[in-house]
Length: 261
Image (spheres, rainbow, N blue to C red):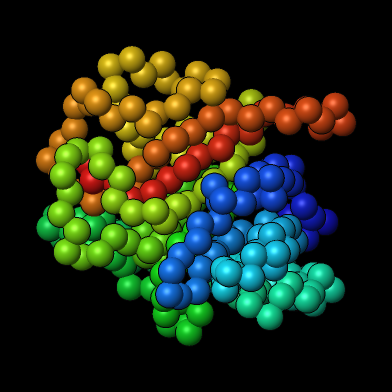
């Protein structure tokens, strides 16, 4: 079976979180559309759940894009979207093909003056003309190098703070836009899990215990930080262990956003 046409446990976990805590994962924005992107959407469960939730919020006009790389997956996605509509006249849900590697060129430059705060140029597609307030990804890191591809993609597509924003302190969260990532904690895939932390720096303090269950890393006080620069960083992470006897599995929920480090 093609990996992209089956629903994995991480997608179910994240879809349940979105449905149970919509205000946490789907913020209200003023005077414009809320834009949501799902990476490696597969069957599109997360996008479908998001559309259903926002369909019950008529005060939140939204555009949701479910993306994947394989054309067969995109065809199945579009079929799932059609079968589950309507979502409400104020919610638009569509699918598109997206290759994370197409964002890599700026990230691989040998120019030492290049910084992450310089946004890469996205591929030419009308759906990518505007950045996204929220990006979701569930079980999308199958090889360690893919975390780097994902970072390049999110760096280009996640809405950045206003250019004139002046940071007040190191560790300051720069915007409300978020990349929510759920990865399964498989003993056979520890390098893949480790690559997420290696790629998205965590806000570290002296009492950091390297990710104990339920540990939050939101306390920025007394943190040692390098000179300020805008970067994608791990704002919060925690382990989840859904009560599912049929498929016992632990998952890591990562909240990633723009931070001045």
